[in-house]
Image 1: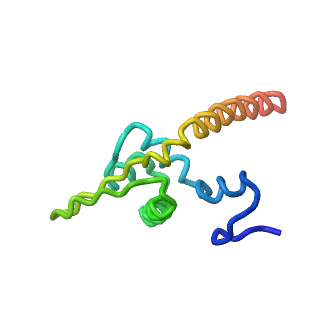
Image 2: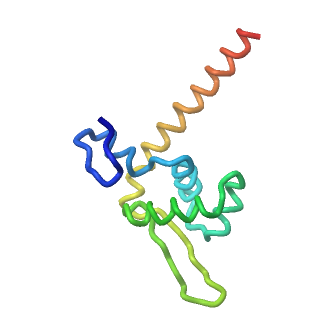
Length: 116
């Protein structure tokens, strides 16, 4: 039976995925590994994602303790996001997922060539 995002799963994999689950969360984290970014910078770096989805994912990751939100309380607003120390524990996991993803993409390309 699926576990809702509000429930804590006894499965460690489900628990981890509940934090990074979302079409763009991995991409956001990958971008922020290079250092803090303003909301607008993140938005420009991922043009396929809507602003609404970006804001939603950012708020969820702040809530989960993965990101830190830095608000300079200025006019115009200046808000930056960075990966928290706790969130940085995901860096090796993200690297492994990225490595696997590259291998999978190469496999799919080879499979497509064989079918052509």
